[in-house]
Structure formats: C-alpha cells, structure tokens
Length: 257
Image (cartoon, one colour):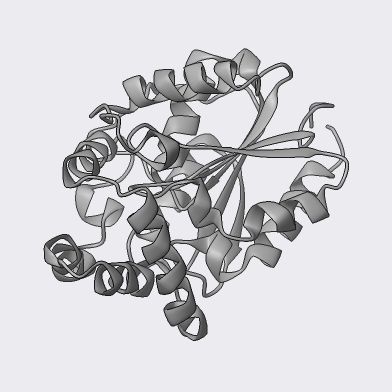
C-alpha cells in the first residue's frame, strides 16, 4: 500500500445525492483515521452546485469534479477516494485520466456498463419503485421512498427521510440534472485497463438497487480486493458505517507486498 494511502480521504456520493447525504459517516471515518484529513466534494448539479447543469457523461463530470478539487486545494497530495455508486464511476475515470492525483480508491456498490447488463446495474425488480419515486410530488414521501430503496435499516427510515427532505429543500437537485446523471451512469464504458493504484470493492449483498453481481464482475475482471457485507443495502455507509470504516482500516493497514 502506498505511503500516502489513507492519509487524505476524498468522498464522492452517487446519483442525485450530495455531500450532506453522507450524514455522520465522515466523522466516523475521521475517528477511524485520526491523523488523516477527510474531505467531501459535490458532483455537478448537486449540493453547493445544485444550480449548475450536470453533464450527461462521466468523462465531463470527472473533469468538473477534478477542477473543483484543485480549486479547493484538495490535491496538494494524492488522495484516497471513497466513492459510492455513480461516484465510483467518476473515481474509476479519475484513476484512468489522472492517476498521479490518487493514492488508492475504494468503490462502494458501483457498476460498469462494459461488465454488467443494464438490468443488473439497476435491478429490474426496482423499476416500478424507481418510477414511483420519479413521479412522487410530495418531497418527504419521495425521500422516504428513496430511503426504502437504498437502505435496509428500517429503524432509521423516518429519521433519515426527514434529514434528506431538509437537504432537498435547501439545495434541490432538478429533475433534468437527475436525468443527465442517470444517462451518464447508464452509458459509461471505461477503457479495458486496470488502474495501477490499489483498488478496493465494498459491496452490500442486500443491495436492491444495483445487483451485487456488478461488484463481483469488477472484482473478477481485475482481481481487486473486495469486502462483502452480508445484509446492507445500496447505501452501505448509511446502513453500517462502522463496518465500512473498519474494512477500510484493514485494507489500508495491510502489509505492502
């Protein structure tokens, strides 16, 4: 493992989500790596950039995210990316384009169109529920439906839905930006080249949005490290952040070969 791996974390969220959707996880990661820096950054069209247009391809999204990271002085030293879902695709493209920026990367419940069919990348069983979310006008009901799709922690549904509703009220992502991000994710086909930097796959076997087989496909194609959570859903860091932080510590602390 490179010397700088795990010293400067940069967190990327997924489809239609912003940095605030990490909740308490960045603090938990900071406690796990007390000597490290932990930073978050928003994708175009979300969070502090919610008034901007999101590109409809991963390549352009990656370029904008990197420019913002440079502007925020987050790349003075190589970062370790922790990236969820759509963020994982951005992380993969970043590794391909600017490997010097990155010490290592951990990808959570992500998928690549070049390895997995569309009905696995968004599980066909979730189509009706996803359509209902897009059509729901009541903000709280929409966020509650999202939670019920991406999380398996039923005891946290109501509390999290209230928090996510407040985020959406403050910085609403537009329907058009959501469609652009969905289009970018659906058609992303990266080059058939394994990144040279250490790579970890984290997967929740209870993911009802993206089939766990998508994470398995990346693992088998490029022989990456992988940890599998037995029951967590798509938002693995929400369902069991302590498990994620612990696995990241195990991975970072493994002996250098």
